[in-house]
Image 1 (cartoon, rainbow, N blue to C red):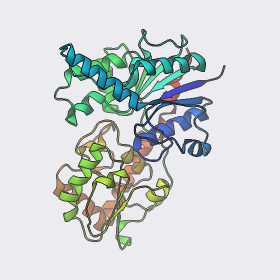
Image 2 (tube, rainbow, N blue to C red; image 1 turned 135 degrees about the vertical axis):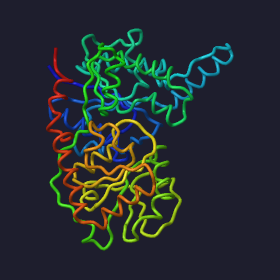
Image 3 (tube, one colour; image 1 turned 90 degrees about the vertical axis):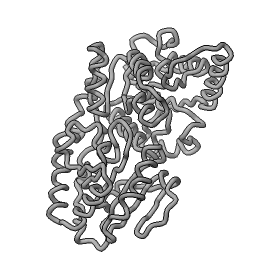
Image 4 (cartoon, one colour; image 1 turned 30 degrees about the vertical axis):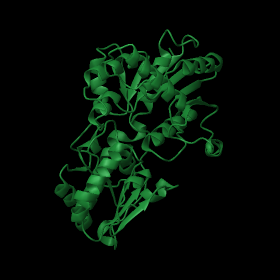
Length: 391
């Protein structure tokens, strides 16, 4: 029997534009190695572009078939529903965004009815209503797996999109309950969701799929300009964090530091500082990491595990971050990251790494050790096999 998966993910995960794409691409790569064929159901006119999809896919052939639904129709449908509710005087509790429209249900059912899938894998609960019994008309026996990249209700609350969390969290739990199996990228969220599900679902912890990189990085004191790097696309958390860093932390950094900011976040950072380099896109992140001495993650808000932190750790690069940078890691204090939520302390960590060779080597070794014992993909392969087991 052919092992065939439908990914329901809103973006073109072949684009090297955001950490979540990196996560999904790594997952797809591993599943293909396991003998699965993957189709992708995504959104056009949303964030990603698809005009170069075929060329990107040719490199590894991770996606067999691509299906697109127009996000413009999601916006139109949501607008019509809000207008109707106002006309009817309906009071509606705050809920998570729901991207499912009648047209999406129809298209999705055409795909799953003809696709002969063994698994449907979804990454955001915004589309979970596709799997409700009253909507889903696919084959019976298809295993439905939810990979929780973020706790959406908490994200909406901390970002100010919602003034309350109760109804949002209730809504999210209801949507998650339609899945047969659940895996969380964040260990924190794994523990919390497991409790909220009251034993109805087993919840697995599956961190970002990445293996330890064998690479030697140079100690900062051997460099004329120590290389400090931030990588991030233009989501609100990255924008807020980097504005804070440039305004509050940067002025206290050693003048030898060369700061490089990589990604679309640069479009929102209208500054000119000495030793600041802004690069919208780097085609080879591996090469960049191999020439990086310190990674920063100055996020003030956010949920889930930070891919940029795990990627840096896989290279043995010391990480300086806020408390949000170690979100999702099983151990918050002995993971090798230097954590500070105050600007002066954040700058102090960077300056000490730059000036103190012994301290730098110590942090570098701690990062390597923690990654090898806790996050290296060799430690989690069995979890993925268990998620996709046949019953």
